[in-house]
Length: 145
Image 1 (cartoon, rainbow, N blue to C red):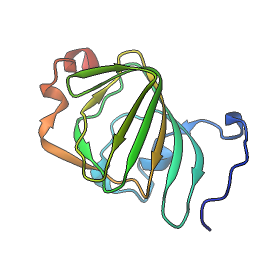
Image 2 (cartoon, helix red, strand yellow; image 1 turned 180 degrees about the vertical axis):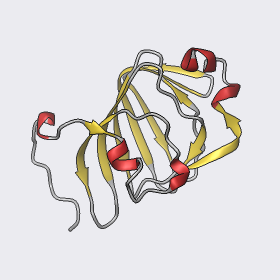
Image 3 (spheres, rainbow, N blue to C red; image 1 turned 90 degrees about the vertical axis):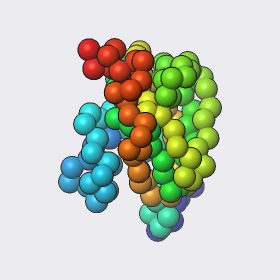
Image 4 (cartoon, one colour; image 1 turned 30 degrees about the vertical axis):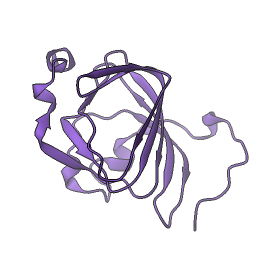
């Protein structure tokens, strides 16, 4: 079944769950995701045929990725609340991001925590950079301290 229309439903109708339910151990997502810590997610809409998905994601203070990454699908993010570092650039919400397929971004870190609305044009996948690592970023000690 393709994505159904959503004619306005409260976010509370979609309970928070661990993002591990989508991308963690026990899912059919690629092992190379290798996510060490998880945030919370509300799946607002999903097309079962294409994998296109709209999500709310909540990341706790200190959450970070291990390296820069890229995806095979279009990813659009709105940082609604909180902050994030993408590489060495700092942003505060509300801020919009658009990452076309194959565009490298990150690594990412949030000091205060972050609330995101994320739209993916298809099934989520990730390829991590071998060259751009979180451990090389100026914020890494704060993220792991």
